[in-house]
Length: 244
Image 1 (cartoon, rainbow, N blue to C red):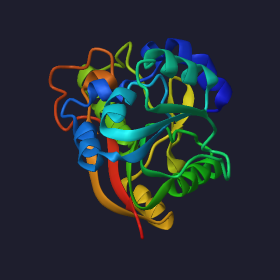
Image 2: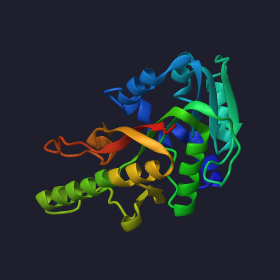
Image 3: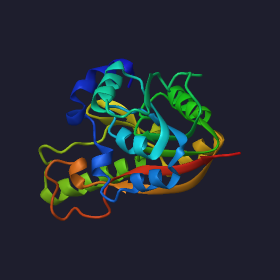
């Protein structure tokens, strides 16, 4: 996933990109943002996309930096949030080494670390560490590899129960060993819980909480069977603090 890909999908974002804010029914992410918010603090929305999180961040922090890799996403975020006076927009690529950006009291990064490139992933985490000042907070959401494998297991059970492959369902493909699972034909990085903890620790963060953001089965399958209930598919939510 590079700049060209995101420039292409940006105009049709609502149809192509899963809306985490809308589908976090328990509002866990909102609650964690509220817990670190202060009108005396600055925050960066890393991978702001069309800016759905900006109204909440603008109302909760003194200054918001909205960052994205795609020019079209920056344009859409500006248009959607023109009424917000404390938001500054920055077009940069966090997957490049030593990207330039302001240092903030907090960072929010919602499903933005998706590149299957290990080098770019490490650059992204390194830049997150650089953007959050010592003692600052990070709220991170990423796709779960455990959830992807669990969904595949449930799909196999569904097929077995029906005695055939269901039309309209999807199977996960890709380089599972390295967490690169295809979503709509695009290799997308999925993370293990322990992988996240180890990576953030190496980048100078202390993990304070790791939780599941659960979604409905409709987020994985078309017309899932009625017996397919909890546990539901999920993303990982990690709350971390930059070490002093």
